[in-house]
Image (tube, rainbow, N blue to C red; front, top):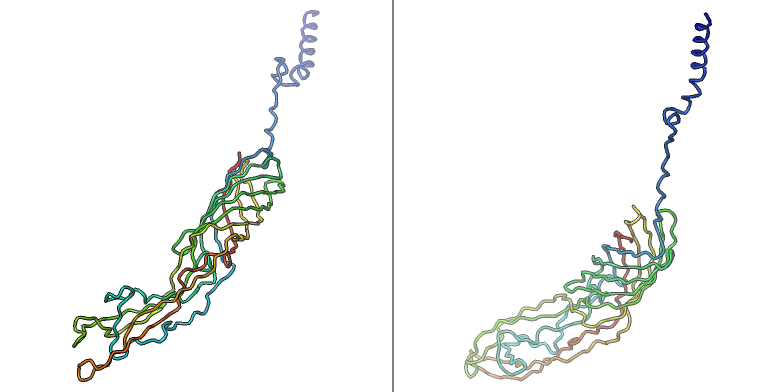
Amino acid sequence: MKKLTLTFCALFALFAAAPVIFADGPESYSGKKEVMQPAPPVCDFYRAHEWDLGIWAAWAFASDTGHFDVPEVDPFTPDTDPSTVDIFSGFSGEQKGDNPNERINLGQWSKNKLFARDDVQGGGVDVKYFFSKYFGVGTEALGLAAKTNFAGGGLMTLTARYPFGRFAPYAWGGVGFIGGGAATYKFYNEKHRYAAGTGIYASSLFVANEQEFWVSDPVSNHHIRGLGQLGAGLEFRVTCHIGLMADFSWNFVFGHDDSDQFTVITQQGANITNFQGQLFASTPVINTAINLGQPGQGSDHQDFGMVRFGVTFSY
């Protein structure tokens, strides 16, 4: 009877202690506890001592758009083409089928003297080093598809930004150079059809008829000009090292002064009168025209605005 009583008491004590023994689970019973790993820290999207590489596409528009009103006139005075028959000898006195003098630059047609049109596309790349979280220095290269002649340049830049979260509005200024580009000018052209002479002029070529027409052709720039740039934009970091950017800048072209140079073109002609198919009289005539021989390459009418969209890589 005593053994049975002791057995019941032992079982009761075991059941009473079980909840306490297994309260912390198997790990507590074995003396081991699970250690929770802390979450990794959120990266700093904008940092001091950061290198940034930007690659972007650009759309640029001229400060002076449109065209000047260049009248389509015959610049030669007097114009003796033709009288009865005209004979031209050219500069050297030799007789040709096409007279090289009859292409005259009447003056500037496009108001813009960098793109030779109102707007262009292009792109570029820039590299910046942020010596603090808010300020950086860098270099920029850009290229723009001006009409028939590439326009490109480079600048040194100073950038200020104000990061908050993934966003960073920024502003910058830069100085450098730009080369290339073109301006459009209006040209007068005259083409002649020649026929053999008669009588004492049988070995000569005379103007049988002519065709006059006007074209607008670009004239390339050949000087390096200074370039200043001021702009502002916004960057958004997709990750700690990759971002998207969009900005606008105004660009000032300066530093070169070169005026238009005009020349006088002369042509030796003749008024010829025939009587019953024979030479009756020949009167020499000097035709003259004012030609814009060397267009100016100055910095006027070359300022432009530029919008850029691109991607940045930071390290």
